[in-house]
Image (tube, rainbow, N blue to C red; front, side, top):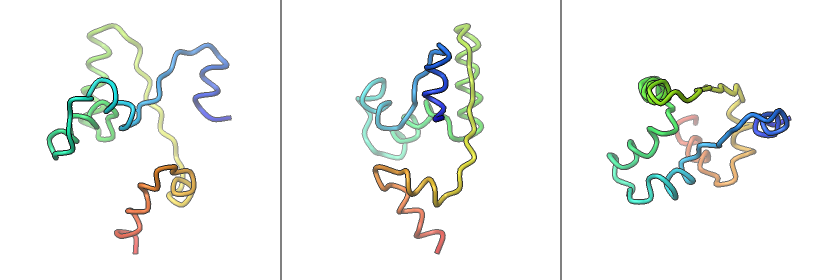
Length: 94
């Protein structure tokens, strides 16, 4: 069962953070410069420093924070990738 479906079935509030939906909402004023990309992706927190910042924001605002790590092989991610953005990963894998 996909994680989002599990959470919904158990009445747990959830929001899927994705670079595209963040860019359309909170960060719709950002472009694609390195600085704008860093600010946009900081909400998704792929790096430990960004994750720590997100966790601190939740603590200060008294919101629960859950980090989910999904261990999936790269080839499976590539099969699931609807935007085909992971095809770029081939350049460094080969």
